[in-house]
Image (cartoon, rainbow, N blue to C red; front, side, top):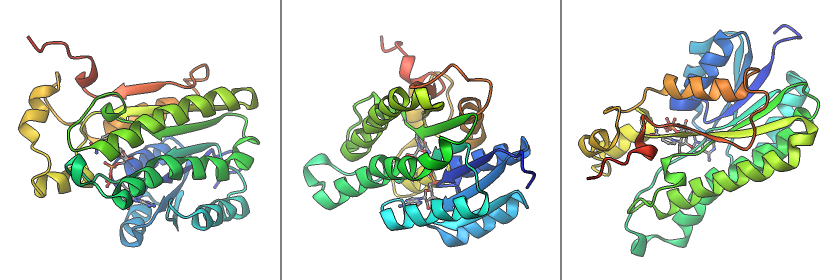
Length: 251
Ligand SMILES: NC(=O)c1ccc[n+]([C@@H]2O[C@H](COP(=O)([O-])OP(=O)(O)OC[C@H]3O[C@@H](n4cnc5c(N)ncnc54)[C@H](O)[C@@H]3O)[C@@H](O)[C@H]2O)c1
């Protein structure tokens, strides 16, 4: 690692969108610290990216685990320029059957988890000359989506968290933005399709561009927000959804 290399920490970095961002970041000359609870995928992901990546096991629902991970970054990389909050799950079920436990778990991973990581990263980010946080929103931030009460509540929460941290930390030089993907071909959506909880035909029909995104296309949008070509943008959710959220052709 060169002392001038910019360091990004990516939760959910072992898979899908988080992995695609970590790879993109290292290809552009940065150092990536992948944070994930899936230790097997984490090992494979770090090996695939190469020597400018390393992995730390984390559970974003545990304050101790999150604080330990960022202490490790403080001791090892001794700097942090970018935090990407990408850890996530999907758990569709009819709203009248959702248990408190599953609802709270969704909020804990997505909203509280992103907050925990932002708070733990803060002492490092305030010392960066160009600090940036990128959160993961979704079309679910804005849309009402049957059987996704916990997911849409969590992604709406990400919108509020992004705007508030952006407003509060702007004067400290920390920009906070989010990307809002439509449907992306990853482990998360593949398992929903396999379980019969997502049917891809209607999704493609509902997306003006007529297809799912590849994780790399979302990583490009995240890289723009994380990097030095978006220096006057904060508190924004950049939709990368193939036009899904702006489509008015319902007639
Ligand atoms: N795939 C999509 O269509 C889509 C669309 C919009 C938003 N998103 C969001 O993008 C993010 C990444 O999703 P993806 O599609 O790449 O999924 P993915 O399943 O490929 O990757 C998610 C990663 O998060 C990790 N993770 C889950 N819970 C964790 C925890 N408690 N602590 C640490 N790591 C944990 C998993 O181990 C996994 O490696 C999520 O926030 C998701 O909601 C995805």
